Image (cartoon, rainbow over all chains, first blue to last red; front, side, top):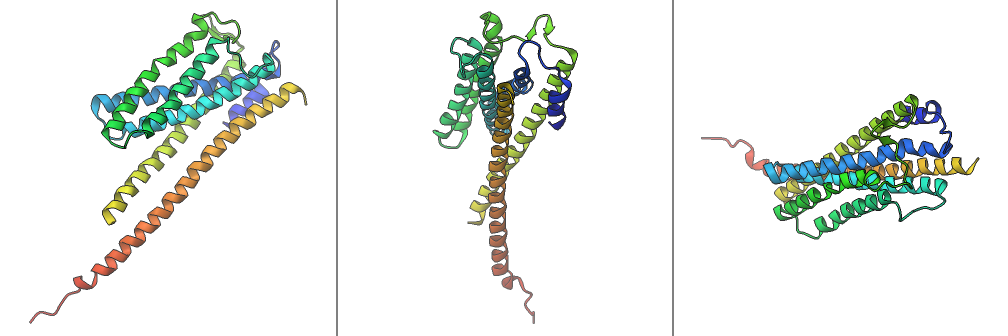
Length: 209
Length: 61
């Protein structure tokens, strides 16, 4: 993470068109892609829960979606800051990319309302898994929205001709994304370990009571 | 400091603050779990102490 921040500050060139504000891209986009990865991972675990009835897959799916929502919130906040500098507005409803990402974020935020409105048990795990699988369909829609709608408001950096940036900028972007994935992976493991420990302690307390 | 620099710094700070808040919440939870482990260990020790006298060998014959 430190290396990524150093590369953003010293290695990546200042964009001739947008200036210094473009540097937000180096962590805004990796955070958004990491959020997608977390939602995708959560859906994969949900599928494993429904398909193979794998022990703990429900908890893993829940933690991944929790991470995704945190990274999703960061995407919205950093994107809004960039929008304020570039467009002069915190939010533009005309951009399909923004609105679809907000829909995706709210959809997954609602996952927690569903999960905690049902008593713990197999029913809750199954309902949550089905919901998580539905949500994953929104990811490619959100990702492709800008290309499908030919949105001219939100910039498109990755086109069919490859990344529209210099080699140094692309290397910085890749390192930032790797750092963000590593951060998400670490937080996922820590949260998951905490949740598993919590469950085992509850079982132990019941046994000793 | 230009406006772009201020916003860039704000974006970094927001990311840092949110990640920090998350880590803080997780660490508080770990502290609670540690306390629970201590309580359960103490409970198990007391149980063991209560059952131990009955396990002492008794003279035969």
